[in-house]
Every structure is written in C-alpha cells, then in structure tokens.
Image 1 (tube, each protein chain N blue to C red):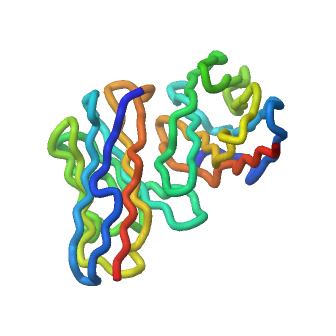
Image 2: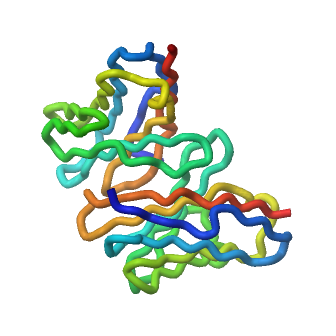
Length: 106
Length: 115
C-alpha cells in the first residue's frame, strides 16, 4: 500500500488559491516528497518536490510540516488547465495512492 | 525538465502474443526505472523496480514470468508482456530516476489493447 493519503477530490474557483494536502506519517528522514499531476491518458507530470524545507517553483509551492508527516501543495491561482489528478509520493516508496482529483470552476 | 520517452505510444496485439514496450531516458542516465500499470479511473500501480544491470524487483502479485523487465543500459528499460490476454489491456507507464531521488521523471505511457 502507498504511504501517502490524500482527499479523493477537491474543488476550486478559477484564479483562487488551492491547498492540496497529503499525509505521510511513516515518512523517513531520507524520503523526498514528490508531487505529480496527471491528465487522462497521459503520464504523470512533475510539479514539485521537497525534503524538509518549503519549496517554490514557477508552478506551485510546497509546504512541509515541521515533523514532515504531512505536506501541502499550493497552487497560488488556479486555472482551468490545473484541473487534474494530483499525487504525492515518497521517493523511497514510489507507490501511488488514489490521489486528489482537482476540479476548477470558471 | 528531463525527458522520458516510451515506444510505442499505443499497441494492439492478439491474445497469446507477446509485446515489448521500451522506456528511454533521453538526457540523463537512469540508474533506476519503475514500471506501472493503470486501469481506467484508477491510480498507478507499481509493478516492478529495476536497477541497471540487475534483475528487477517485482511487487507482490505481479507475475515475473509474464512481465519481463530488462534494464540493460542506463538509458533503456523494456517491459515485455508475454502471452498477453485481454485482461492485460492497460496503460503502462515507466519512470526513470537518475543518481539522486530528486531526478525522477515519468514517460507518456503506452496504451496496450489485447484482442
């Protein structure tokens, strides 16, 4: 079984921020937290990754809890193109959970 | 970012035949490759992990004699589905990792249909 758990679905309005949570309570100190997103019939697309500190890139921000047992992917202004299934996985495990299906409403 | 390719993108084969899927890392050396399959409306299921030059490690419930994985070079891994049956029809996705777990990318997937 995957070592991450996420809500099955979330909704957002266009141009509003979205916070996608992920729990990984059995994470190890050497695990990187990776986030990917997937559109139908496509391979997962890299979004962001982190080890312990919060991270920002052009796509998103990643906030990692101090105890590292949870993380949150932040899309600062959701667009219709951000609608996808979002997955968080751990580098030492590489098993996918069910992911979160993000719906963005115009 | 780095690119991982898969070939073919889609394949149709007859029941009982074998089909080979290639996964290539185009601009980095993949010391580890992961193979997944994904059924409609489901998540990716890890099938096996392979390190270059070593035998693949299969997940529980995945038949190693049916899903043959070869990782003979740092840029190429192949998955061969032997004696394919209609229930093997699925979306197969590979992922390649460089020396660091930070460097991890997925291929675009291969749609296999067994008739």
